[in-house]
Image (cartoon, rainbow, N blue to C red):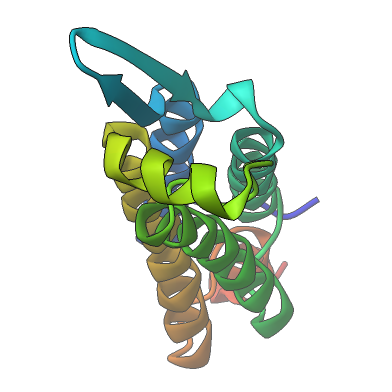
Amino acid sequence: MATGNTSDGIDMATKLVLLGGAVTIVAAFLPWISVELGPFSESVTGIDGDDGMITLVLAAGAMAVAYLREWSPFTAGGVVVLGGLAALLGLLYISDPLMGADVSEAEREMAEAMASPEIGLYLTVLGGLVVAAGGFKGYQDRSSGESTGAAVEATSPEAEP
């Protein structure tokens, strides 16, 4: 099984994916939405709903793929898609904090005035974008001949008997 590891350690593309994925996973446990009504305040974390679990799974999947697989156009594309989906989901909630909430139109207007996005959403977007950037970097490295992992060992002159 090829990995994103090189003889000098983990390549930059894989490091970006691991970092972005870790940020996205941590963000799922942080507040995503807060609602304030006078002196009362309530916040909801990402994992309190399905969408935080989705971003967590997307990030973990991207991390596993980047770490366990050799960079190829398919691997890089998959990582970009996973990171992009996590970032997109965060952006959708930032633009509409009540997305997916089961509220009537009248309740929505009142709730929109009280609901606001929190740090977890912003970190979800940031982490997802860093994951996607890692996928792009992996594709660039592969395209420019900077293959990683077992592919480097198999094609290097030292690997031949």
